[in-house]
Amino acid sequence: MESRYYRHWHLAKDETELNITELEYSAIRFQEAFARWIVTIGELTGSSGLKYGEHVMLHVIRMQDRPKSTATIARLINRDDMPNIQYSLRKLESEGLVRKKKEKGTKNFVYEITARGTQITDEYAKIRAEMLTKNLRALSDIDHRTEQAAQTLSIMTGIYEESARNAAAFNHDL
Image (spheres, rainbow, N blue to C red):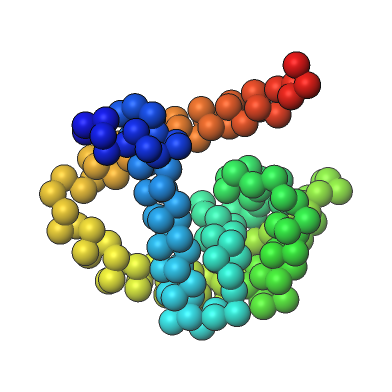
């Protein structure tokens, strides 16, 4: 792109910065569309009282059909706001979608999916396959494209994490 198109944009002084900025704004728009999708499908499955993050946690708890601790859930969704995560887990529990149980031989607690939670997540998967996956399959080379996108986003997540650590250690007084 010619520099005249990005030279007045404070986040994009050259083509690389422009591409990074475009990716960041695409990620923001994608995340919002994804959240809206999850909540909308949640309404169809009978879990309309849940927010985006609670739906995500419900699916993460069901992942691999094994119970997960609060710390594991937080790690899997790259969040560190433990009080908010615990609040959401209590909400999922009160909705009868997950159950808290003591891990055998330890003082730790884990969360596991209930029969109702399984029903809700199965219905979500069914609707997702019918409405979303079917449409995405129409894109050429979708499997390769989504694999590459996932790998790129994972690598960039690490770079953003490292940059955030560096920024946190930055001394503003110097």
